[in-house]
Every structure is written in C-alpha cells, then in structure tokens.
Amino acid sequence: MKKLLLILTFVLFSFNANAEKEDFKQWTCYEHFGEDAKTVLTIGYFPNSYKVGESVGLMSLKTNNKMLPVFHFINGIKDTFTWGEEGSEYELMISVGDGRSWVYDFTRVKKGESTKPSDTLNCKDRITIQKDPIEFENVVKEVGWDKSLYKY
Image (cartoon, rainbow, N blue to C red; front, side, top):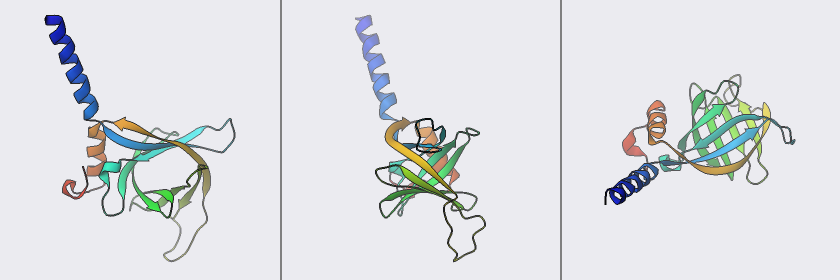
C-alpha cells in the first residue's frame, strides 16, 4: 500500500510539473547555410502571450549566452522579432520554409529611411519546447506588459 501511494504521489507531482510549463516556439539560427555552420543564436516566443498583434519572447546570443527579451509578430508570412532599448532598434525576419533570415540594424537609420539587412542567417527547425512559467512571467514583466492584457 505504501509503495502504491508513493508511486501515485510521484505520478501526480510529475504531471503537475509538466502541466505548469509554458509552450515556447523556438528557432536555432546558424551563421550560414553550410554543413559546418555554427549556432549564432536561438530565438522564440511564448504563443500564450499574444497581445495586440504581438507576443513576447526570448533570444539567447551564443557569443555571451545573454538572454534578451524580444517582441514577436507576423509580417506577411514571415515570423519577425524586434528588440533593443526602445524595442525596435534591431529586427530578425525568418522566412517560411527555407530558413533564410535577415537581421536589420536600425540604430543609425533616420526616420523615414530604409536600410538593407546587416546580416543573413539560417534559422531553421522551429520546435515547440517547454519553458518554466517563471521565465514567462519575468519576460512579460521586463517588457512592461500588464498581466491582465495578455492571453494566459
């Protein structure tokens, strides 16, 4: 009987831990399209954070393993991420299908001017992983969103 109770307790706690995880749609981005390409960054978003046309997400740069909050939205058929001091100094657009992706740096672009991509990456293999809800809460808080405004 004790053994059955112990197993039941373990199963219940395991199920609850998994049920509390947040879905996170993530891409891995490589420096080029060759077989020897190194990972440059991972980027993704929490689909449950959708609010007024955008979601919040996280980007991890492999150069320093720093996690940055990002905004995600759909631009035509491309997944688009923005980040920076004001939230839109940089942009990463990921095309559907082949993983071709463009990085834009708007820090020196005057209002009304256009710019060309500063880099091209190969972002592929979008997967859904599970993230700790604390990470989700922290990024929503960091970008200054009111919890009552997003779908959760």
